[in-house]
Image (tube, rainbow, N blue to C red; front, side, top):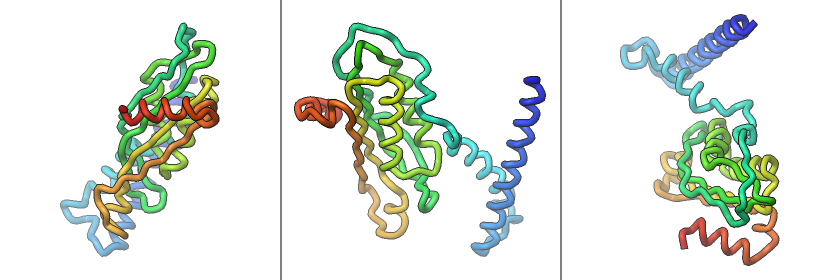
Amino acid sequence: MSETVNQHNKISTENENLEVESAIRQILVSIGEDPDRTGLLLTPSRVARMYKEIFSGIKKDPKDEITVTYAENHDEIILVRDISFYSMCEHHLVPFFGTAHVAYLPKNGIITGLSKLARVVEVASRRPQVQERMTTQIATAILEKLNPMGVAVVIEAEHMCMSMRGIKKPGSKTVTSVLKGIFQTNQSSRQEVLSLIRGI
């Protein structure tokens, strides 16, 4: 049975790659290029392989990355700062990239591995995305899976749709935040987590 499923998945992947290759070839023709010239001959297949990688989070739920939890005697903030990510702006299909800072305050000592927080960011970023939604998806995943006292997610990113086209302002950063639970309702908890994120 597993061999049949694997074969089916392989065929589906090959068909998807061919569809992407065909679409990229048509784009090259549409912009006035020759997809058969030496430099572009392998571009459609390269783009198909790249898209498979950078859009691997489509149809995945970020919260499913939190596969392990532990009961520990810990009731203070847990924060992972500077989680690097790359995503694709869904408006122009050009990259935005930066860092995510993810914090939560455990309830009843329930925690997860630190790498799981990075994996949540990874899955949320690997799809056509907007930064605001990505920030919310990360916070919601942690809230639903760990049921903590509070969650805080802050993302800082540069968007190529602002840097290389349109307004053309390279180096500008967009900052989004989502605070849930006690970090939203309690001012001192809010200030504490934001100070930790800023490194103050």
